[in-house]
Length: 174
View (cartoon, rainbow, N blue to C red):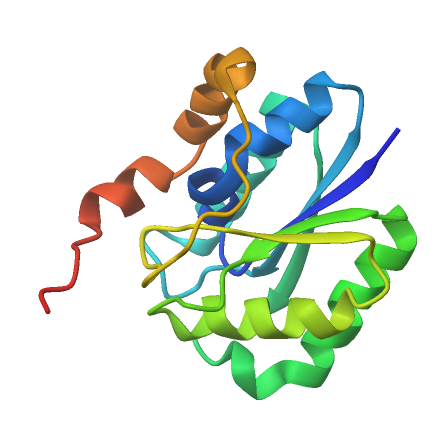
């Protein structure tokens, strides 16, 4: 059994970025933990609702959930706390595969989580980045066929405010 850790800066990031992949891991018998670094105080909806949606999304695919509680917005100001949080979750879960944000992203929290994950997961066998709606110039190198878990992934996505967040997101005009 592989122990997988998905890391997202905010509630809905994992749902938008790699829900199908996490669901596929679970379907293959792997143990999956979702780490949500912030409570999402600055995002759409109120914090208790966003956290409950994250819990529902994790339950929908059978994943464990860890809510980190760092402040939304200035995650980069809490780098040491973030390193310790990620290291603690990696250690407690025994994660051998990690999915995290890509480094080329327009959101500062996503970039901070991406960079910090690389250091905090230095001993993890496999660290992969996922794309999100705010990614800039993301280059795909690994493709995961999620056809078999698409229904489960969509159920998870519907549990969260991800639909509302995606609907409000507008592509930057360059």
